[in-house]
Every structure is written in structure tokens, then in C-alpha cells.
Amino acid sequence: MGLVARDSIEEVRRANDIVDVIHACVPLQKRGSQYWANCPFHDEKTPSFTVSPQRQTYKCFGCGEFGNVLDFVMKFEKLDFREALEKLADRGGVTLNYEQGRGPSTAERSTRAKALDMMEWAQRGFAANLERHEAAKQYLEARGLGGEVAEKWGIGYAPDEYHRQSDAALKKFDVETIEATGLCKRNERGWYDFFRGRITFPIRDPRGRIVGFGARLLDPEAKAQKYVNSAEGLLFHKSKLLYGVDVLAQSLQLKSEGRVLLMEGYTDVIAAHEAGFDNAVAPLGTSLTREQVALAHRYGDGVTLVLDGDQAGVIAAERGVNVVLEMGVDAKVAILPEGKDPFDMLRKDGPEAFAEVLKEARDAFDFKLDMLRARFAFTRPVEAEKALREMADMISRAESASLRELYARKAAAALNVRERAVLNVVEAERAKNVESRPDDAAPRQAATDPRTAHERELLRRLFENPKVMGSAGSIAPPGSFRTSALRGLYREMLNAWDEHGELLAGALVSHLADDERAELDRVLEHLKIPENLSREDQADTDEQEQRLISELQKLADSGGRKEKTQDLNELRQRKRRKGNRQT
Image 1 (cartoon, rainbow, N blue to C red):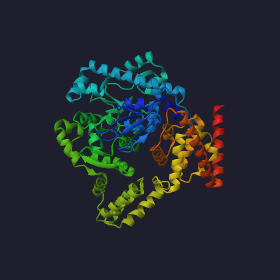
Image 2: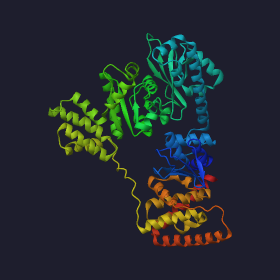
Image 3: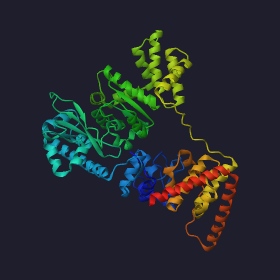
Image 4: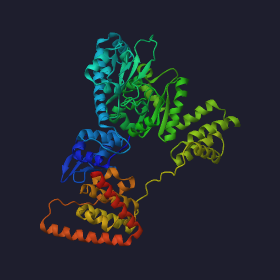
């Protein structure tokens, strides 16, 4: 899918006033020209979270969180940028356009919306069918999943009939929509229902929309796969979803403990939530993927893999352990007593016994070493080398250089070899398995020399005197700024003025790199935006603008001529491209 056009991002931001969006989530109180609240991102008794309608930004003076309306929705609702953008686009009635690659066409967007409607329609039907089917209700009641639990989790039933749902769907939805949901299929004999004779579990995305279903056979004697999921399609991508992720943002356990529990199945998650462990989610019948770990990591500082106590469950979970270790996620492994799964343990032994298992959770790396010890005799050189190579393959995939070194140190101690020997094998594996690339450098600390302070002050004054932006680019191109982060921020300020004729901090945030965002935050710290100017104030403002123009000229004169020329050419090309897009 292509990149969303810059203009579309700005249109979404303009369509969603930051005060309105945040006030719907956090009660705001107006004080002067700002709005204040207790910060939703950390515990506090005295409000330090402020929202500026003039800048369209928020800032917490307690924990340092800062951003625009998109940043708030991403952090508050645990969405990625695309999901937050789509949610705010829906809220503001904005149709997203794409500038690189191919975005969804108008027809696809229409089909997606109708497919989501059909999923909700199907869910209502499954829930109604459950009420009419005694065997399904009895099955759920016997497992503690009936009544209010079934209603809360949307558990339903798909009758063991070939055409019930498809016949009804064809009267209500078009063929493209039906095919997009995967609820009904067709062959040479016509349409048929995909889910038949099964208990159904709606699967929701992080925004709470039903995008698929999981289903379990009701008849244990039936010759069919016990569990099935919706087919991959327009809405459903099982490797990127977690069952229960839609309620994680409200988890009380997660707020107190900061860890997400990764379980194996739907009923495990439901039983955990009903017992008070509302930080539980599960993959959708597949091995744990990087996308799923990344999704879980949005919500918590770490994850705990909860494994069934049988040998098959432990062995099957090792790939998931590899994934969390490679990604550098703070991970633990909790192994249940042999022969038990979370659902049975919570029902029979109670939440206290389950909590004890979680307390005994081991570090994921130590668990990985134990798995290797079970397969290889570390005291035998040949066996130890096999273990070393397997461990080195996993370590080589770790994304952080420092993490690879720490892993290598622990592996060396366990295998009784020199750390350098482990690192040599790791480096060989990394060269073989991973494309070489420079390590991402951490954002550089802001310089505090007088030149940087002066450049920062000039940008602050540009925010206070935005009329100067009309000529600023020709007076002092971005190359005039020596500090790279300030140079990038200034370039985005010129872009914003050139494209929209205004300078609004909230419009810039989504287009800035991390170090540039940090500089914007510093620039805004002492910003004063006058509202109603008297005649005397206006005269003073005119004088300030002239002084600012003069200082920009001095800055440009101190910069490199070659850099300035390149920047001017770049700005001219950008303006030509913008003109071409408008014609």
C-alpha cells in the first residue's frame, strides 16, 4: 500500500480539533487560553497536561509527552500511525489520498466499509442463533462460557446448514462485499456458508472493528478441522492480529504491571479476563509472529508467554521465544503444571494458583538456554558447538548491537567458551542471514553552544512573527542552519507556510524526525502568541519582524554558499512539483 499524501495528513489534522478529540477521552478544564488535565499517560494528582488550541498540540510537563492530535490518538488508543490516521479520517469525513505506490481505490474503500458492516450483521446473526440452539448453549455453559460471558465476548453459533447465511447475505449485500468478508464461499454448485456447526468468536482489530471470526466445531465426532479462522482477505490478516487486543487499552492489570500475557487460544484469553487477568491476548492459531509481538508491545513494557505444561506445548513455543528475543522485547516465560492449560487451571485451581505460576515466570533467554540443554549435552564439545551455532543464529537476528553483545556474554557463560568466540559466530551468521546495514544511531543530544541557542531562538521568533515566513526561505535557506535537527525543523516550517500559508506547530509534528520533534518542543517552551494587538503593539511587531529579517540575513551570510544554493534549488523544485500537482 502506498504512502498517504502529505496533504491528506494535513486535511485529517485540520478536520479534528485537538481539544475536541482529547476532551472526548480526558476531561479538560480551560485556564486562560490553554486547557489542562491530569495526564492520561502517567499517574499524577496535580494537572500538568496542557492542550493548546492555538498550536494544536499537547504537552505534559510531568512526563514530557508532546505531540499533535495524531500522536495523542496513537498513544492513548495504542494505534499505529496508519490506524490513527484512518480513525481520524473517518471521524472528520476525510478521504485519504496516496502519493507513492497504490492506495486503496474508492471502490476498495467502499467495499471495506460494507464488509465491516456485513461482519457486524453476521455477528448479530451468530448471537441470535446461539440463543436458539440448546446444544451450543449447553456446551458453553458446561465450560463456564455461557450467559453473560458469551454475551460479553460476542460468542455465537453458526448452524450446521450450507445455505442459511449465504442466502440471507445475497439479499442484503453485493457479491464483492460478501467475498471480501470470507463468510460465504462459492463453488461450481453455488454459494455456501463457510462456518457451519461451529461456536463462533468474533475477532476484532485494535479499533474494535470485527474483521474476522474464529470457530470451533461443536460436534467432536465431526470429521473436520477442530478450529478454523476466517480466510485471509481484505479485512483479515491473522499474522497481524491478536485475540482480545481491542480491550487491552483499558486493562487494569496492564496499568499496574506493564506486561501483556500471550496465551494460546480464545478460551484461555476469556478465562483469564474473567478471572481478573485482563492483560491477556492470544495469536490466532498460528506461531507467534513479529507483527503480533510488536502489536502487544504497543500496550505494555514487556510480555509473558504463558505455555501449556505438556512437552509438545513447550517445544512449539520455542519459535515464539526466538521472536521476542530477536526483537529485544522484555520477555518472560511462564510454564503451567504438566497437563494443564490456562483455561482449565483458572477454572479448577483458581486465579491464585495461576498468579503463582506468573510469579515464577523465567527470563526468556534463560528459557531458551534450558531448551538447548534439553537437546544438547553442553559438556561434550561437538554437542556444545551445535548449541552454539543454533544460539548464534538467533542472536544474529537481534536488532540491537548492544543486545547481541549481552546475549553473547550469557551464552558464553552457559557454554563455557570465550565471549569473543560466540561473537565471531554471531557476526558470521549475521553476515549470512541479514543484509548489512549501519546501526541506527540514537537521536543526538541537542547542542547547547551559543550558535545552536541562537538558531533555536530565531525559529521561536518565526512562530511569533509568522509573516516573515513568506520571505524567510529566500533570505535564509535551510542550509544556513548548522544544527541538523533545527535545519530539518526549519525546512518543514517553510514547507508548511508554502503549502498552507500558516505556521501551526500541530501541523508540523507528523512530518518531523525524533530529533526535530524534540527541537520543536524546545522552541515552543517559551513561545508567546499575541491575540488582540493594539496599534502600539502592532508597531512593535513590525519592528520585531524587521529585526528578525535582518538576523536571518546574518545567519545566511555566515552559512556556506554551496549549501545555500543547493537548498534554494531544492525549494524551487519543490514549489514546481507543488504547482504541477495543482494543475
